[in-house]
Length: 225
Image (cartoon, rainbow, N blue to C red; front, side):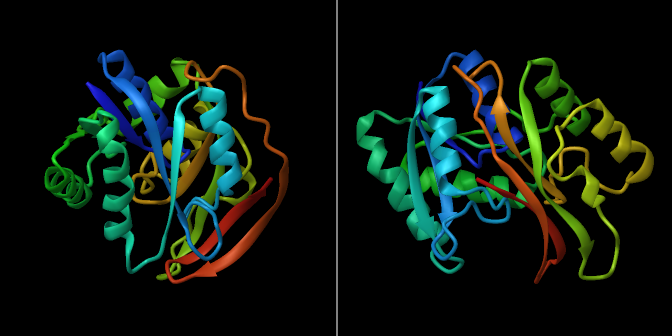
């Protein structure tokens, strides 16, 4: 099946894309959404041009769409419908267990006449991260919730900018057992720089870690270029 991938630049969308290809699907497009005000992937804080570098190094065409908080679904459909004439029959997502989001993607895909494909759905989150690492992918932690709006502490600042590896898994399991291993609840986000999909690594110039208060609590962001 000819498909597109909902692409955030992070580990889950990347692994979902990889597994879809192994399932025999042909990926024609990566589809990425950035905020219309900051030109970065929302919550991840990844600059738009770094997503383009990923696309170039993977050698899959990128469709990047600006959205705002009030028009996301409208512009999501508009972007995807623009590539359906190229033969797109389905779209891949990296959801794991959030039922509400799965229901949303099934509905919007059905309304567009394409199939929603969820290669990671229902897999234990630690197994997903283990498969990601063992497959040879490399990603860095580029944002993390430091403290939620209730004052509960999240991931330590020292981890932002570091690789997702077994040391990080062990840290979460031993010191932060209430945080999902894959960050499925939005506890942290990643940027994939290398792996079996890549023709060459993406070079990231890491800058300082910045703190920012958001409506969802205090967050750490890696200011990347």
